[in-house]
Image 1 (cartoon, rainbow, N blue to C red):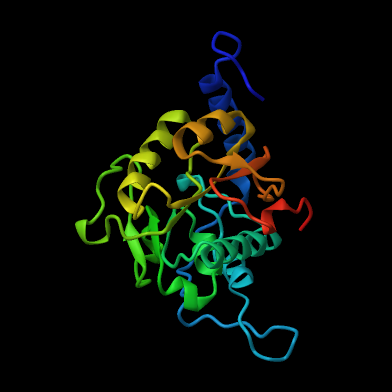
Image 2: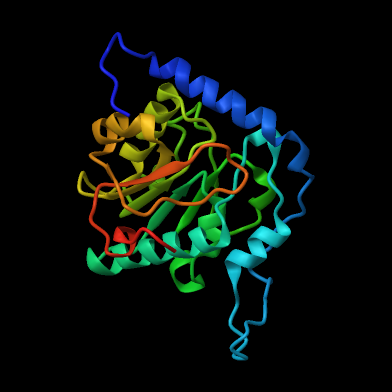
Length: 233
């Protein structure tokens, strides 16, 4: 929905959407255990003993209401991880910064994840070697050693407000190797113009499923993706 100035206050609308979601969410949360991706294993149905990290994450990591966490469905996680891997191969990239997206970070194949970092406020994952403590309210608080070292960023903030996204943009500018870095982000339809302004990103056909979120997100990227051109999972 594109709104011209003076028609609808999108800031108020986004705030109302968030409040509706929070009111409907309280009963589904519980304290989560530490998810150890380095030791977790799950036997797949193919008998080859390959791990299903998405399933392991969802089974071992309940959402936390205090941090406004909402996980993608397992099928959406797999599509998004496939799209990330596709982008890295297509554009000759390697290193990804996952900003507030622990589910996707832990669902990625281990060989890719070893080159990536998780920027996250929830310290329950602090033992993971790729963990970087991140508070979006301090967008410039990024270690000097890792500034300008990432080829791609994947972002799913805990809030959908414009000021929150603008802070993430500041962090993204510090992390990417250059202006041509890849960006993948999820947020509401009402933020389409903002995503284009901040990241040059446009919505894809594929829309991720977030079961416990009362409104539907769109997926925005500043690159083309065959995987994300499909509507169904």
